[in-house]
Image (cartoon, rainbow over all chains, first blue to last red; front, side, top):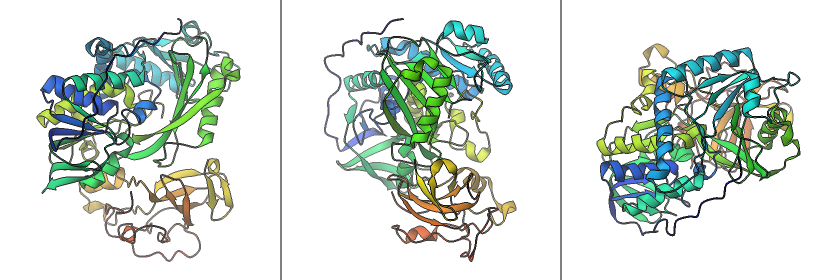
Amino acid sequence: MSTHQLPEHPEFLWHNPEPKSSYDAVIVGGGGHGLATAYFLAKNHGMTNIAVLEKGWLAGGNMARNTTIIRSNYLWDESAAIYEHALKLWEVLPEELEYDFLFSQRGVMNLAHTLGDVRESVRRVGANKLNGVDAEWLDPQQVKELCPILNISDNIRYPVMGATYQPRAGIAKHDHVAWAFARKCDEMGVDIIQNCEVTGFLKDGNRVVGVKTNRGTINTEKVGLCAAGHSSVLAEMAGFRLPIQSHPLQALVSELHEPVHPTVVMSNHVHVYVSQAHKGELVMGAGVDSYNGYGQRGSFHVIEHQMAAAVELFPIFARAHVLRTWGGIVDTTLDASPIVGTTPVENMFVNCGWGTGGFKGTPAAGLTFAHTIATGAPHKLNKPFALERFETGALIDEHGAAAVAH
Amino acid sequence: MLLIPCPNCGPRDETEFHYGGQAHVAYPENPNELNDREWAEYLFYRENTKGTFAERWVHSTGCRQWFNMVRDTVTYDIQAVYQMGSPRPATAVPAAAESGTATTAANSTITLGDAASSTPASSISAPEGATK
């Protein structure tokens, strides 16, 4: 493994058009999910008279702030189906979008530190295999062979007792992913409008007919919300509620290092996830700050805790330095599964609740949400992720089940 | 790190506390009469206010008492701390915010001191109506 030279960017990425007075559909939120939705609306459903509205700059929210881990080793069938579909799309998208965003399938390891972890992990490997998701159980020696810098000794508080491993999982360059989608959207005629904040919705009875923005009113037949941590704020403007709580989620990078970390390691129990970016930074994340927050920053003790975990698992990191820390706002649901589907407002659709793991789902979110917006009915992959599940009780409880490191 | 003014112990680091989510969510008065939608509201739907928000905290490694706090979810400024069972105090919030919030009359947590709470609001799903 060696550090990669980043590929040259294309000559031209996207225009910055003025908003038109009306569109067939408006996507609120110009992050990965919004752009992917617009891409699939144009490509699969021929809807090109559409706009993506972004209140800041393109992909400057959670798309710029995540740790870029892509995997599909979720426990439950519904989750495995949608995340595995996403992973299959990740595998073909660089070619389809004609943009090498450095999807590196270096594998993801989820460590087990207790007997409970081991049982959960082995069960999840079995469930993954039944769902066609590549998964293996590794003993500590195999863990060490795949990731030599991991400390597998018995002399730590929570020794490594093994790990699940998904070889096809990996990381990608998040910014390049957004730019790749944006470029193709622009080519197909989609308007990408930055610095355009939605301030309200126009409704005719219970049907949405337009969007009020700081750059004027835009009439539209359909609205798709892709605003992650701000979904509740938009829903309130539109007159309905979402079962979402927004929390700060922090991540950090070290300075650049020689390649030392060949894969991605996640540990729920001592709670840190670590990879090494293409350029050489160690990229780490952990859990959310406990309180509700929209501040795009969290508390220092959360970082201190994840650093302690990282140094215990990777003693070589003890002399690395934290270069930058930052926070994003994640939209968590109580079952740790997303909400993709219709809303109580006619012609308004919502894609939210991806919480701490939305990046990996980007292509499938876009594909299924575009299908839902275009046809008015869910794709079979997002049907189980409807808002109604909180009433019917058909929750998809991935908390602790899915190797989800919250 | 937040510096949280515990009503019993004074200002302490956030690490001594645990978060309890939105304050003033009362257990349904007539649980047998709730339909699925209303149960969903009680179990899964909470305000997710961007701005001034009334929430519960417990001082886990101090007095181990629950209390309520009004905090801005954008600036993280703490605007008021008050006892369980007391109504939300007036802070820099539109007055309309008070009407929609139920008090914790049926809350199982400890009520301290003068707990003369206002009457519980009838609807658990009433929007807090505050702030963005």
